[in-house]
Image (cartoon, rainbow over all chains, first blue to last red; front, side, top):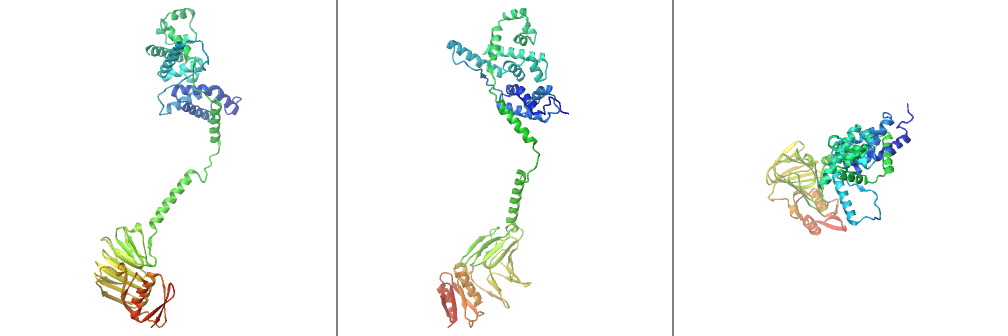
Length: 169
Length: 303
């Protein structure tokens, strides 16, 4: 029996794609540092979701996608050493700040990015999902299938490590 | 301080979950400014640009591909590869099993190295064929016309002709087969000629000839067939075979008048260099006149 919100309906499937594909893709990117690979994982995850559309409830679609993608990532034997090259958010064309200040800021961003790439995969993904994708802890917990407390621990550990790394540099 | 005790403290602070008291205390912590800067700055990071529509269409494409019934095309890659391999295998098999053939045309000579390095020299208008892949099992050559053989030692070497077989172990010999004439000259070693279930053994300097109704054996002194030195030599050979040898050598047609005895036994030689001289050396002593009816046709009449 086909349910009202069955993922097997193309429209519903597309909605699921619209809602989750970006954070899934970013999540995979935070893991492997390779955009193309990350998008391959997303593509494959959604294809599998479609094939199993009758078995997966819409409420479970998100965690299904993240689990599948994560497994794909784990099965991908040769993942690269993660070097994330985060792009800066839209830069202002003009500024009232002094060149010294701007230089310092630039240096800080470099330090921050280096520190992030040195985080453990688990710390990095939760931290960036929160910072960049603005996901709430509860959402991250749901995506990754872990408790909110576990997310909080990882975030705290990530912050601590970032602080240490940046302080040292 | 909570920051060191509570493993979730920083996360809670970042999420604005600390109460006023906790927050005030944390603000006095020496690391507070850096933490604040980290969360403020990290918020400005961005993931690489994402083209959602492009990825969605990729997903749809893959889904569509999967939907299609899996009909194995008759000309699937596998089939083509299989067919090509078969073809290659077959052609290797075919070519390996097909006979290797060497031909000479009018006036030509050809030296052929056999797979075991034995040597064959073909006289004009002759051909040999043999199966290269069976050579190691049986050294057998089919001969039409005339050829000289230098056989390396090894397994039995057989020359098959329409009239009979010549077998040897390692020697040099000449075989000439023309219609109903078979002539074998042995230049070295020992040769066995088998014709009509009879065996004739030839040693160095011995020759054997069988025509329709006569067999002949004789001795000679040459070390190699005269045709290799630009001459054809005959020893009591019926004239018709001499005429045949001339036509093979010079690509001419020779017609003899009825009153000429074509079975006359001719002994002598003719050169391969010059047709006119050849004709003179053969026919003048026999008192036969030759006339060119055109460039390549010769009429023989009694003097």
